[in-house]
Image (cartoon, rainbow, N blue to C red; front, side, top):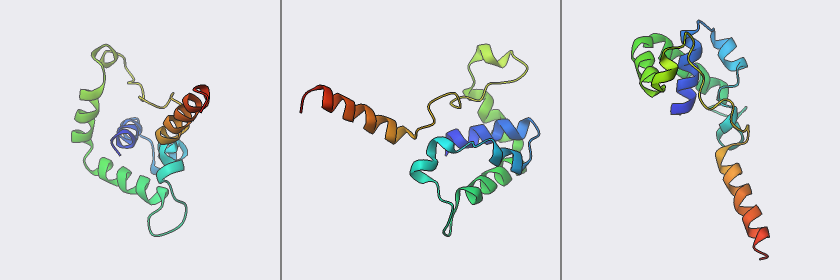
Length: 108
């Protein structure tokens, strides 16, 4: 939740609309494990809720985001979205895959 909220915060600070935030796929790292397109609580509903919360309380979220950015990046005019350059596979799947590779390599 925190990583997604930080990504949404950055986009809100850049003046993006909720549609643009959804198009940025801020939750793509977690959609394979936690995402849903049907049912009582979908990924779109989650992004809407996060966007509304951050938009209504931008100052505290901005302060939180800036505390998490390394000092050398604070000097730049546009902070970097952390974590978006990582693999698009959810963390659990990446770790499971590494474990499977180690398991095969050990000859078991």
